[in-house]
Image 1: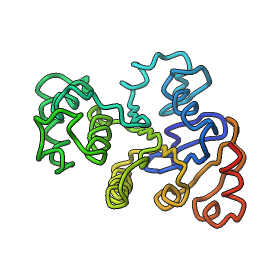
Image 2: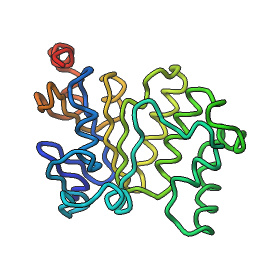
Image 3: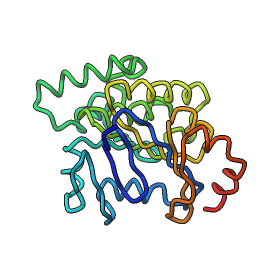
Image 4: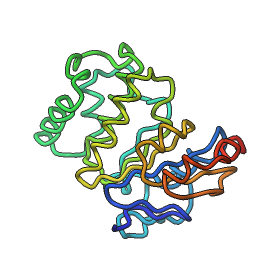
Length: 217
């Protein structure tokens, strides 16, 4: 499996979901921000050292990001949110918007609705669709299930699993270990910015010390 991402002890292959686990303050967001380029640190993306590249260059190379709390553009419509995130030429951008609306029927029902009028679940789907607009090869998600109803969480996780079929790699940062490990193939546990455990999803899920490690912060 070719490495899509390499940073410290974390590597992610094409078509793989890797869970990054830890409680509040464990360093999950800091890790994602380092991959994005908001923080300094050596990062390899798609077989290339991108440590010196700016955030915009990393995104255009094939990186997508769904931040914690969704952070959609509240005053813009669903369609405008999608268009604002896309660097493709106008005709391709329109086509890509149509593809995203087809992929997320709940958004297709309200393309002209302002984002602040959407439910939490709809906003999360909009944040995900927005991150997919540029056809990323690596998708970073920071606490995507936070505050969502169980039925929405289940739908979100099904979609993430389906996305790997075309080789898209996913880094899933979560506090809810059981949910993340249910869709991931591997995982790492962070505590105070350091990897304290790593292994297959099955091994981590069966680890009786996982809860204690997660609580370590």
